[in-house]
Length: 145
Length: 145
Image (cartoon, rainbow over all chains, first blue to last red; front, top):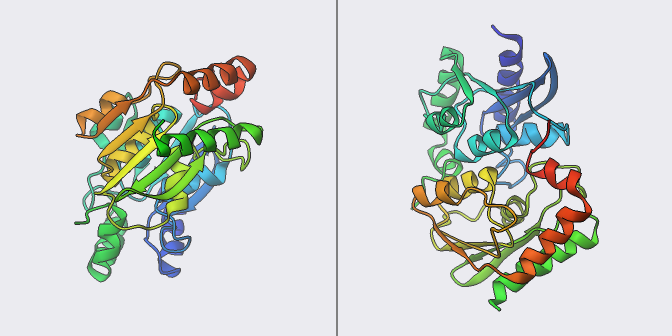
């Protein structure tokens, strides 16, 4: 297992153990971890803190993102993908996209390299969560009436 | 002047008076203000708190955004536009897009209605800011080397 993806999975589990949505993220710059984060919709009553956003929030103002890679246990949604494009983060490595296909094409159309590791551990974690808390999941991806 | 846009401009000025980036936002649901916000990159050392994001953050978990309109003194960037698309906010009203043309086409391609009021007050506020603090502005839109 990639050590940075392992950290992202650890973050996702941390979120799950807090009663939150199990998605974790890690920002790496020049080969070193800058920040980690996880989805905090439940914990902070905050709709914008997806895993990737929490991670970028935790990183603070780091200047250029040119030499960064962002890891996420799940394919980014349009909010997180738009942020990746705006911040000019050149590469995204995700744990899986089976449970949510997100905005891969949008990122690729803006020159972002997207790698999907298709990890059974990540798929299982999301499938368990979606089965257990479907309303919370639908709220997080805004599949609401 | 539209009362909600006036509130967004008031938010932008609040940010400016704090030494921050003068961009404000208001979320309206069913014709009533849900939350206001302004860019807090400087104030909270936070790259994700653009005006629109701070406003959505302040609104908390409100369920569906179907009957909402988001106001911003400036055309949304890809981060904020991606969030608007993901949250299914159907309408965006902006003060101007002369100083930053943002991601209008992206939003429109996803069915978001975008109205540009092209207000001299908003244009002047941004032009003054960009002239006074070009490095900070370039950091906020990630025009960094």
